[in-house]
Structures are given as C-alpha cells and as structure tokens.
Image 1 (cartoon, rainbow, N blue to C red):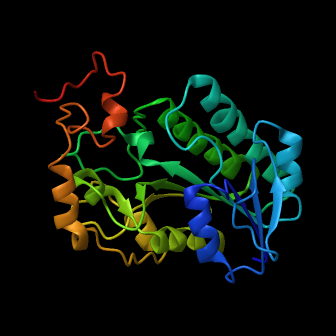
Image 2: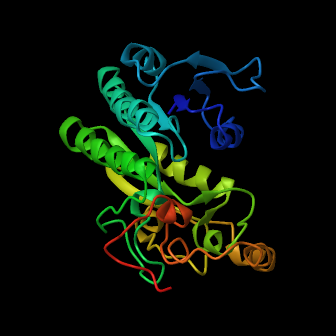
Image 3: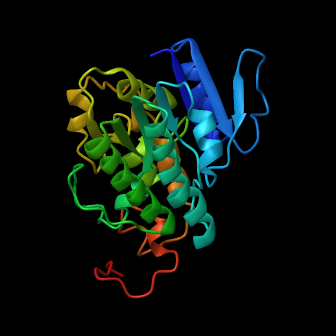
Length: 270
C-alpha cells in the first residue's frame, strides 16, 4: 500500500498515529477541518468537511487505504453527531467506493457496546448496546462498514477503541486501555493483511482485567505490547479519588452510561 489517508488527523489519536505510521507507507495524506499544528513540509494536508461528500471524495482521490478517525470523538448534541458521525461516515464510505479505495479502517468505539455490565465478557459478535448518541453513531458506522464490505467489496476493519493513551488512568481503563503502538499495530493489520475482508477488532492492549474477547485480532497476528497491570498502582490510586457512580461503575461504558440515565432495563446495584 503506497498512499493512505488519515481523517481526523489533527485530533489527539490522529496526531500520535501519524507519527507512528510515518515511514511505514510512502505517502500519507492528512485530512481534518484544520491542519495539525505541527504539520511538516513533507506532509500533505487536504481540508475536508465530512458532511460535504464532494470534499470527502476529493480527499480520498488516489488513495489505496483510509484510516477514518474523523468526526465527533465524544458525546455531543444530536445535530453534531448526526452531521459528523452519521452523514459524515456515510460520505466517507461512499467516497471510498467512488474513488476505488481498497481498504478502510474505521475507528469505532467501546461506547458502541457500553451497556454491557462489567462482569460479562463479550466478543465481537455480541449485539451492539450503545451508551450514548456518540456510541449509537459508532454502531451505525459499523453497520455502514458491513454494507460497503458485503455489497461493494471494500476490505474493512472496524476497531472498537477502548481508551487510547500512554497509561490507564483509573480502574475502568485498566480493562479497556490501548497503548498507541498497539493501536498502530491493529491499523496496520487492517491496511496490510492479505486475508482481511470484513473484521471487527477490539482496540485494547494486553489487559489482564479486560472484558472483551479479542481472539479475532489475534487470528490476524495481533500481539499487543502494552500491559495495563504495569500501571495498576497509579490507576487505583487515581480511582480512589473519584466519586462513586453506581450506574457508571456497573456498566462497561462508565460515565457515558450514567449520563442522562433515567430508568434503564438493567439496574445497577445501589
């Protein structure tokens, strides 16, 4: 693969990943609403509003693979989520189809399955249980990804990212943390592995307390390097300072579940 487009390249994840992927692919094109603050002379930036199909198609022209990180990255009002993550996600896949892009790696989220209780271990075949408007938009993204894979033949990998960072910072993140180098490894599998057709992976490192069966990623050679337990003491010390959250502490989605919670089907113990 010679040319790869990264959407959302100016965001936190995009900024780290473009550094980790530099040199792996000969040409990396970056896209967002505004260029990265540290854009270098050898990097190509194309501004694109995800809600504008023509702009997205222009950004996707001539690329072989897309890493789609763009859109609203946290819970937002419905109008924002609709334009960036629903319409924008459709535009991304449609632009990829029109421009003959071979592969797309879609940044999904653990919030697509946030309403599973923490005591339940799930795999990628578990039904979606989004915990927010944002989570529902990621479930939509997974659905539209499957449509374009099975109907149009795009090779697509959806990565349900846990919590991206240099270290897990509380008890929940000990279960869902993904180190930057491990997420980069998963993305490279999605872009490069010859047997990828349509897959869903969990974006997590080697987490002894993990809630998710990531055997699908391991079948394609994923070998995470980060170990969440290496940060256990710091994470639990930070956890002890947080206020109790009976709903959020029960569900995998944390505060995304307790936010705006009224009368759910499954009540947490209080």
